[in-house]
Length: 160
Image 1: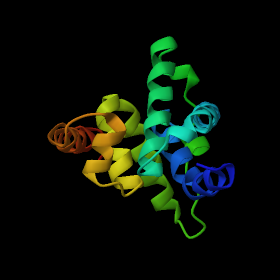
Image 2: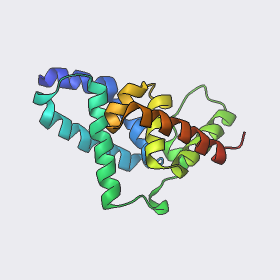
Image 3: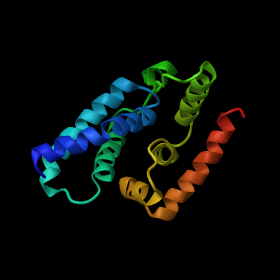
Image 4: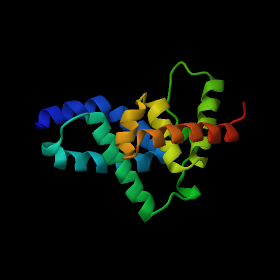
């Protein structure tokens, strides 16, 4: 892959990649940015060997960076920024919608990491289950289970 193509591909997925990592990091946008930068550097170094779905590939690298980070230093509650820091802004959002987003972010932080990852990729990034399976290196049936289980766990933490 040429440098120009790599840059073009990164521009196309940079926003979704940052949102994905911010959700995994429970709204800690500084950590998400650090992990995104680490993932992009790793991807660039390996870009000569790349073939296939770029977005799934870069999300897989970012997910591995997140897993490596949590193994080194698990997220502590004092590392998690306020919900406002991780909120994805929407100029038309009402106060009620912003409150619901905050509630979802808090609930996501409470469910298991694999379920959170599957939920974020599927519902926030519109990624199909087969691509999520590639990112998470899991069978598609397992991804479908994580999605189902994640939805159940979210319902327990979100008031309807």
